[in-house]
Image (cartoon, rainbow, N blue to C red; front, side, top):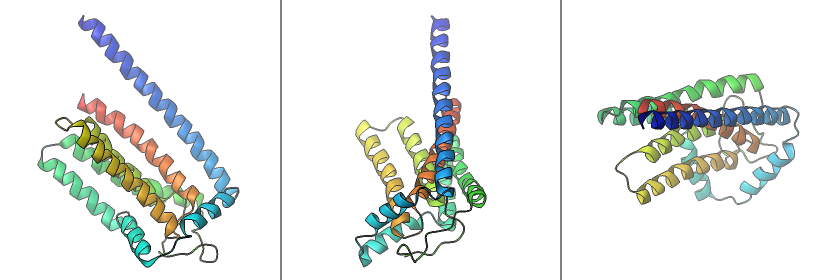
Length: 221
């Protein structure tokens, strides 16, 4: 019986790894294709179109709200959020969770490296309404990469946590995913990024989550 359970467990583990590897490969191909469209300027139509839609409604209150959603992605604020959240997990003796959240700090290096390699300029004030001035290159979005990984990892922790009712678990995950979405929209609304920059940040962020989830589940088991 134990041998049978062991073989089933091994099969599930192998199948999970295979699915993750396949998804990672598809995301890599998607990112390369997206990068080609960005560098060849073939994505300009969609970038202009979506920026126009999101910036069509302009209001001082909406400007402030979007700046608020984008604020958490600033380097110092993001670093503090990572350290504070990891420390909270350590206080409750959740070492695996603390390390998992702490790994989010790697997104800064990943984002900077890709930006320097691809070297795409930011949206200009001559084509979009630039509400928030930003530094460095545009593709992929560092904010969206951070939001996807940080809130995504918290979603993974909540999903596999014990002692949480299904309803509370669902609400928490919904709010975490909502933060990712709001952060992404804010970057386009503020004129800091193009739509394809956001997609690039999402893709790399999900790749990060695929690896982190496997390591987390392996250690948790």
